[in-house]
Length: 229
Image 1 (cartoon, helix red, strand yellow):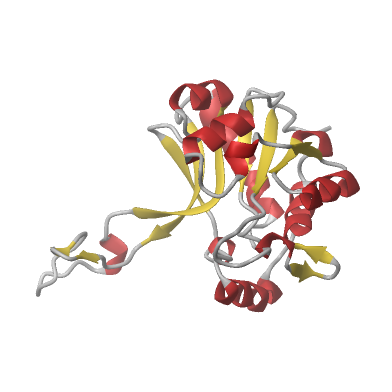
Image 2 (cartoon, one colour):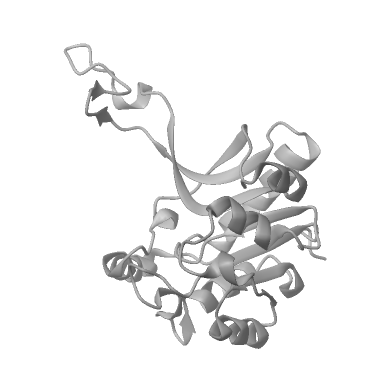
């Protein structure tokens, strides 16, 4: 039995990528392109009727049909270039989802493993839905590093009293791979994170982002270290 029936998985796919043309359809694993690879990952923990591809592309609709998942055609102004704000896009996509909760999953982070998605969903149900300790969830990397701004050091003293790295304050880098929240609060506030999200830490390999061609090549090179279990 599927333990995540109350969570809809949204995979947004905007065909008109400005940095790397048709990047969502790049070949990635055997005969699967990036979109198909992401669907395959998520179908290892979620039923096809709870996975929704949101896109302005007829090619993505064909993929949804072939892989047994749902398709959401957004209103044209939500999917053309950057005419709509992110908030408008989020609300437009999740408005008609059949569940109270949703996961917003990004295609261009192909090395986040099914086991990580599964664990994140379990944390969401426990810490957000059941115990209400947090109001949302986001995938992050914990950074214990030394940071500067133009004005000077941000998180340590750059002098003879320099803090050792393990004692630096926790700073979290959002990977942009996974966001989870309930639909009602998202529609009211226009964003898929609340003020007290659970920081779900993923591996560094899971945060490799295909933003341009270099990222694509890095991701392919790192795939040999990927464990899909």
